[in-house]
Length: 497
Ligand code: BES
Ligand code: ZN
Ligand code: ZN
Image (cartoon, rainbow, N blue to C red; front, top):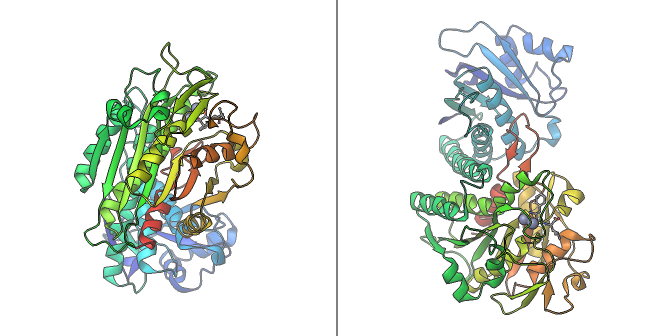
């Protein structure tokens, strides 16, 4: 999609519509709104006075006016809530809501005035990311009723901004937005198509395109390394497990000597629960049980494009959890790569079994700081719903940095404790068991289990079961996969350079 940045003469932009952010109780007689109000012959003031449009975030209102040839002729008011609460991260949703409306009207090009006083690079970045992620749809496999309207391009207006800043922001937002859509496409794929092998193939292809190193470990290689915890999950599947390893090495490394970040993802391509079979109703949702892995792959893609000066390794354990004569049973005991014995009491708590070996492997590869991402527990949805990702860890500084970075980019993380709950995962007959006691503190039990496989690294665990998939469409985003945590992880990496 074409993108452009402009720093003056918004109203003269050669586009089909001018989208302007409007706040609650905004004053149409001041600044840019005044200019547009004059253009529209007082229509904006009249719409605001009538309260047909209140400026709530997600709200839009289109109006037409007589324009010179080639100029817009349409204004789209885009609500953004209260002005003093408006942050740079809100620009993405506003730009996305505008872009979806413009596409609905079957228009091709629009210009947006985000009206944020934030840093120009960040504002342009957020606008571009918001427009690009707003265009994602779930219609890949439709042969009829496909969305055939296509947005052609967008212009971002930031009054007085340096052209270089606009350009940089648009490039960054495009890289991040397209990487989010890459992740969302993976999460949306049906599991008969996106098998562990296919996931590895997509990662390899992407790695080649953006210049990442990609290695895929086969079952035989994992067996050799002793990854019996991960491998136990796919015993019941016809599909062989795959461990995807993506490496980003900066041209100039400014990390402290020996420091490396590891991103680790749960790639359960489909989770039937295994022998501890899930109920049939809603089981189809378990195609998105690979969203953690998909976000890791998307984050690595964005990192490769943005070229930060610190090294990052991305590791995704891909398996399919199926019931079968060869599948593992509740009460089986396996020995993980780090030597710990695991009593599998529920084969549906499989994500942690995958992460146990994937996290240990990542630390062995030299990661000194590890963040794992997983749709790990239904319990996190009960606790936090779909607003916040559950976060836990062994290092408060890392957890705090992730939460703070999330606030900057508009992603919510809420911490749950681990300390004091350690006895939850003690097994009667082995070192650890893969579930907690009854249904209590289910998300914490998941985090505690993974912690058993971290040695010296700083580590944080993100339970994205509630945030990786949106059950309903929003003004700025289709329903379905969200590409959660990519923005936060990319910014975190950049902040550490
Ligand atoms: N993939 C699920 C968690 C999940 C549930 C993700 C709903 C998204 C939506 C995970 O593998 C699982 O089944 N967890 C069990 C753990 C339990 C057996 C301790 C759960 O949450 O019920
Ligand atoms: Zn499960
Ligand atoms: Zn699962």
